Amino acid sequence: MLEVDALSSRYGRITALDSVNLRVDRGELVALVGANGAGKSTLLRALSGVQPTAAGSVRFEGADVTRASARARVRMGIVQVPEGRQVFGPLTVEDNLMLGAYVRPPAEIAGALEQVYALFPVLASKRRDAAGTLSGGQQQMLAMGRALMARPKLLLLDEPSMGLAPRLVAEIFATIRSLKDAATTILLVDQNARAALSVADRAYVLEVGRIALSGSGTELLDNPAVQQAYLGL
Image (cartoon, one colour):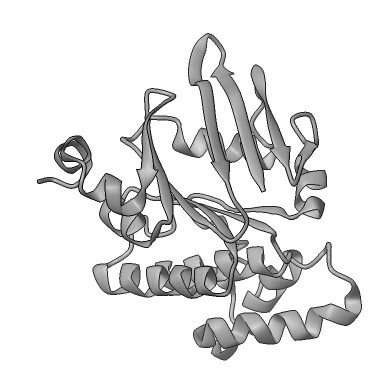
């Protein structure tokens, strides 16, 4: 579904991504792990079209989307859940979800809302509340629900467990597993490397803007270098 070939990106003179190659097949959950500052979020932003690229290419479902706008990529089915939730605090929960549905035909929106509420029942009970009054975990559910309203073919998840208590982290990863079981194609970035690798079909390790290792989630969990650097073993 997604093919990234020699992708590079810079912030001024600083190279954030250096000739990155990766792929995501249809129905896969692929994890991207690495230290802070390795370029993980930059890569997701480049894939969603909000971070300029300096070289290389991105192909989605066989089409070259390297120069496509972020808006066009959403319409193609590339949808990102940003780091830090980024919900619209003064708006209600339901209004936030509706913002994710702008690419959907009006006749589909009511059904899409019910699907999100079935996945996240707490959002249904708080649909009239301001998003800013939700807990961090609830806001993460809202950010994920908003992305699902856009009917993603490829879901980009950027640090979904950041800042959450362990119980809420478990809930978020249970939801990610259920999305995977429903054949949603996912590219996941998370600092919780153990949880990310445990749920991944395949994974990549990003170091200073370059892919350092790749393999199945299980292979990287068992890799001594990964265990020492990212799993605290």
